[in-house]
Amino acid sequence: MILTITMFLTATFGLMLVALSTYTSLRRRKLLVAHGDAGDTDLKRRIRAHGNFIENAPFLLIMTGALEMAQAPQWSVAAIALAFLVARLIHAVGTLYGKGPMLRASAMVIQHVAMVVACVYLMILVI
Image (tube, rainbow, N blue to C red; front, side, top):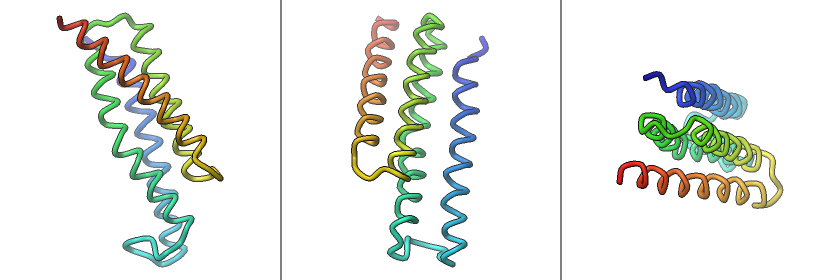
């Protein structure tokens, strides 16, 4: 069984991770800061965007892979994976450039709703 949706999401998340990590590293280099954030607001945002991504993306990939392995319909796995992807993109943009919590909050609502749907779906598939 080839997990095509999970593979695509993994590749996309991998590129996002490289982008967020590089963006953080470039700011560190500019400020000559090896550890911490040196009190720089921009570096703090970059660190958080990268950190939040790495805190959430792996579990989202596991859930997507589990849905595919459980042979959930491709359209449903694709819809959940798309919600995960959109949420991660919106959250990163909101963390890096947002003036308030609206984008980040919207992203977390999308992600959490998709996670609950995926969790319930997985439970139904194994019962």
